[in-house]
Image: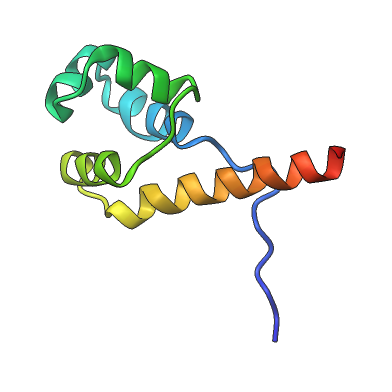
Length: 91
């Protein structure tokens, strides 16, 4: 049985949101925050990697962007596992 290797350096979901959705569509963070019903601070913290994706935020993003909530939860889980693995390697 072959196991799939995780990405070497997974992106934070906020970086993915910015680079794959916000910038290509020419949206401002203020516009996206308003459409999501979030504060600008909440969105900016997510983009800067200071905040993670929660189940509620995954639902909001999926509805607004036409994706699935699982996509956003998987981005977050992949990122979190990578961070945890790196911490163990340092210890």
